[in-house]
Image (cartoon, rainbow, N blue to C red; front, side, top):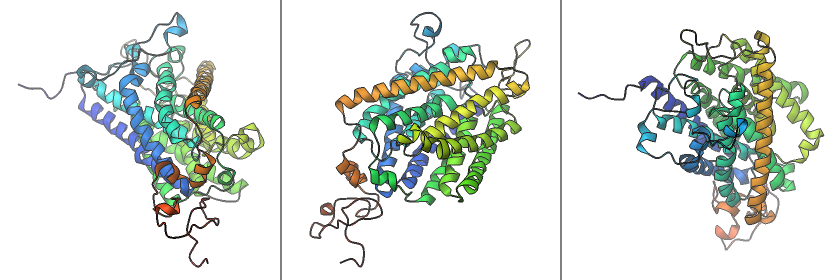
Length: 475
């Protein structure tokens, strides 16, 4: 007699967890690679996509060697209280037990139902979250960061910054023990990426003036395709985080789509009312803000709460990006895609609204006997200010930790590797770094590499490089 799987394993839960993880992975590869490649200036399309592909691969290796155990392993006890809940012991997760043994997060044992899938499913599911975070961070530094510096920065940042934040909120660390919640990464992923991307943009320095003044999207239809993968991939992002194919998973999925639609429409209406336009870039920004804001709240809110959150997610980041940012010191930092607004601000909005709109009838896990259900009591449902206070503390910790650590890592790294490409290379774009063009001879390759017998054209063109042949009909 043979058994297909051990008694702890639920085929349904296991299948959903791997499916959800694959949906999240598609958000990065190819989702964000396509989105970035389409929304940036033509000469940066390949470099932007390459930053995505590299980060996805580098984070997986880092995650298997140290990242997962720092985020979800047994805690390192540095002292009493907070000091015993900062991060886990760094070690590889490569053994047979890590592959087929029952999934386990030491500090959450007894605080939630036992996992019904193997540890490998948990490792992979959490990897795709770890991978997308520096990829989102990249949105703040597109169009000038030295690719060699990016190659070193990503694994260091992932291990020392992302994994620590994940432990504090998701691995049972001190913020979780305080009572703060983050359903699927509004703080751990989006606030972290937005703050770190903004700090990185400030440390690395701006793009060329010409690129800042004129940075048209090179292919908005391609960008829309990437955005669509992002939106539907989010069903795995928020739907996978109950860790079970249960009732709250389904609620989280519908709430995700409802809030996103509301945020997209709100951003669109704001554009039409104040900027007299209805732009695809605006619609994508609104969509992203809705996805980001619902992420920390997806399974804790009812439908009305998700709708209200979506409106707030479309309105508040729009105001910070279009009204507050340009008129304050924030506008002096060249945050290429505005990740501070679309991720940090939107994530903060969603995380704080959990403390206001959390509905205790939205049950994540049911208690048996005298064990209470697991849900969130928001201010509007009689929970007082307690949850809102916990959410505020967690927000401040994630903002402060990410800002300080990102600044420190980049300053040390900058001693050894230039963080910013040279101005000469910035004039060229993709070809200067990768010696490749998405469309050879069009996207910036030096003329001598293509047809050395023809003279170079030094006139202006649509993508800012000065190394192309004259346009048709030019003498």
